[in-house]
Length: 366
Image (cartoon, rainbow, N blue to C red):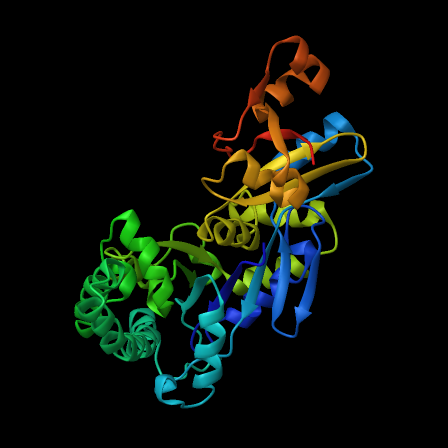
């Protein structure tokens, strides 16, 4: 679908280490592939145990997982909004992404220099927030006069509504709050998308900790939680250095033993990939048979014809109906034929909202 998450953070917080770990299939529980589109863009497969179950049942010739694009964005410094350092490139790159993974340093290590001389993840967060907020204020100021003129002279209701939204954003930004903290109804959220505000993008805060803090966190991660409590954001705790060690292990058994010793069910990288997928508001439906078991990505809330179009545009144009099997039924009964015999195949029309995990077969005619 071409949706991207951008990894951002100050220099030396561990974001590039995490990005490099993503590039190693060994960092995950199974052999999921990774490829590079550009020097700083990776396409990472989404770990999904449901594909493993489908493979056991259908024994397909190939298994194709869902993917998500991760962009390693250049480190930001103070003054980026004014072009300092790689500021202009940073802001241009982040504007092109659909969501943000913000890495914060939450560990002490005298051998790893901090760009500001001390470890303070809340301060680091605020540095990046401030730069993005300044840029968003500039965006609103550039749009405001034109929108106001259209609203008054043409009596355009949409322009008037957008003006109200910009006023709400402007107030928040001038108070040092990101646009995502502003409460909007669904119609306002849709209208706000045309502003392309940096601080209105969904965000996942990744607290990079030392190994002993992976399970419980530490004082730094607690400070981050308190700082973001009013944001529509999630927090993930990961030890990048530990992930690097996992990535270097050759065998699955060694990696599993290492994770067991840490009390973890899976690697932080796997959790990060799944969280990025969720952050983009994506879900998965499946097709499965002897030739292929495949995970297809769609936007949450999509209707059956739209999901059919994910496979091929002709499927959407000529959509007739969808045959749907729930994943739990497929796994418990063990085959499509058994689901059919048990009456577990549901026939759905154009108004069906596809659910995460649906196994689907589309009927179409063009």
